[in-house]
Image (tube, rainbow, N blue to C red; front, side, top):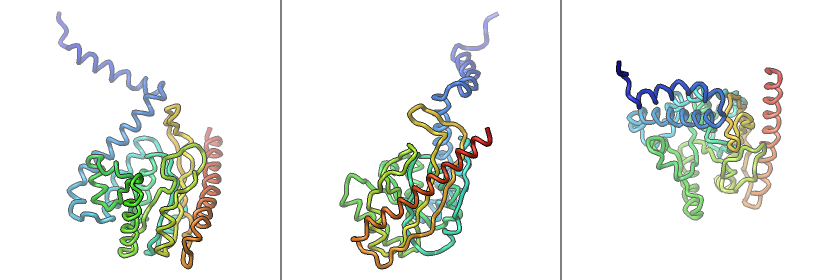
Length: 275
């Protein structure tokens, strides 16, 4: 009796049956699958929400709506977030928010915080603007896209964004390291965010993500894990000038390094206790 299944169907069935084995045994497979699921979920969610954010184009509160749905991607990839210092967001005062940048997973932590952050938008790399529905939705939600290679234009866009922050009493989130770095430290900061804060005489508010000990792009490791996100008290800039730029930058960075080390050590200790 001839088989009723075609070779493609048998191949597909065999592949599906091997998925649990690959997920359990292969770090590389698990690493890429989790990122695929994360990006796919966020992309589909952004696509579905486009009609909603189109009603209020360039309104930063669209990010609150998006976060309520996109945040579930954390459960899919197995990342838990512990939020500290959220009381510092309970103000209408505008400011420049700075944070360390370790992975594209950072946005998932921000999704957890947006309902409390309320009026807050982000400075992002220009290529993300062309990332399909995600990029279009982000633009509709007021994100500021900057090409860092075009310095003069980037400065003008930052000036324009800062003026809007003041006018609309919004917070502007910047990653001053300039690139992702998940090697157990916080890199020296680029100065753009601090120029903007000093020129506008608005505070700088540091936010610290603890180390992603469960994630390693080199070995393609992506295990379940927990991240502590700590919001620190705003650092005032009233009376500061550009001569104080290095002082402000280093003050913020040293505060963040101290919290980064403490919160990362806390998680390692918690992990050992759990084991």
